[in-house]
Length: 151
Image 1 (cartoon, rainbow, N blue to C red):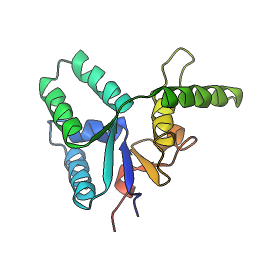
Image 2: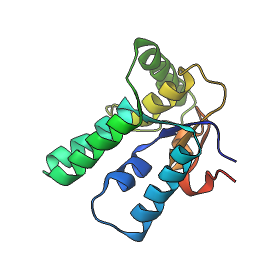
Image 3: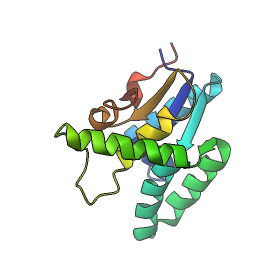
Image 4: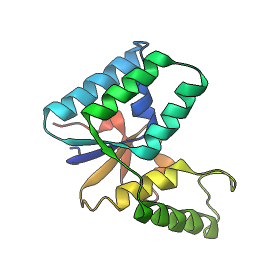
């Protein structure tokens, strides 16, 4: 069963906003519609928007940008906050102290920022929907998006 609050990571966010209708993107879009239709709180975190948006801009994919903008306006949007960025710095440092960094030392490390956004949201039952659980689940609840069902 899915948590009542779902944050979208870049994987599902990119799939849902991809104008090319692959079987996986169609399945992801249907999954998202089901969550929203059941009244779950589905959130686009600013860090995930940034990561998807920068690639769409680089590749000059106007249709993808339009779909990302439309989705961000229909769903709840979670801006970055000072509290989230400070928590991300704690996660980043802890990972390195434990010898298990989640990204290169010079990388911004969107995973710890996303996990920090989930952690500082102030909601007890939250999950990050992703295509890669590994790094995120060390800091916040995360699951593969197809595994998050409403049944």
